[in-house]
Length: 355
Image (tube, rainbow, N blue to C red; front, side, top):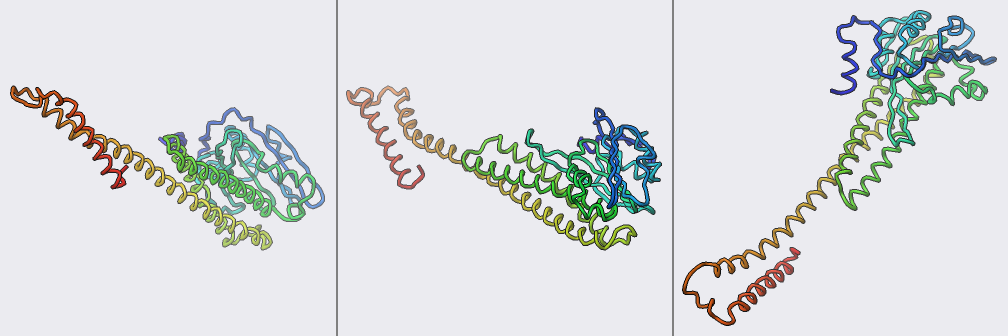
């Protein structure tokens, strides 16, 4: 049973909108990071409990509330109450196997997408769900684990180095979060591409069962990438076409650019998918050729021994009158005949270029 199905089983029998955490990262201590800013000031708070005053959206500021760790349903519920989130939104936030999607509500937009990062230490791809709630002057973001993906955005807000972030609204902040997430896809794509090239070189030199195992692992990673990236194109297209009062024409320009990035990522995924399929075909072809070479050698050996076996069988019969048995040179003559036959067949195979 797949991991996503196992997670969905936890919700079986529950009413729609029932908050059920479907993940298994219970060791993460829930942390709330609040950034409140405008073009004149920046305030940041980090807490493990909900402080209504800290997380309260202010008309004169943009409020960014990030929650790391989702297993505390009560804490998520407090934030949802503060921002009047629909129960179905809370349910989707806690469902960490949720397919990437976008939903419109009266006062906010809800978006889910996958954060994909590459672990250089473990040399593997990590997947995590990001949930975004975008309102007129606030952005809520929820993840199960590390917040490091958005460290650069937080640093730019602290230092004031990003004028666009400070002077624009929550829609631009949401765009930057999505853009940072999608940029990580290209890092993962590059690592997978390098891995494909390395495997291809190894297969050409000497195909092994380890190569086949690596190819299947790559196919699984590319499938995850494809499932993560394709829905994002629909999400951005929806943001561009829908009439939301808090998405400005300024941000729409950047969303169009982000749409182009997603299309490029999709093209790259499809290319990698074709490459992996080609490598698998090459692997199977090389293994088949190697097996054919082995069978050819065995066939040649068997063919050479057929006439020799016939001669030995002929003189192995228990007849009383066989003149060659009493002949003084019968044995060396038989060996000479068998040797000549073997040499003749080898010369014949060589001329035919079978060996």
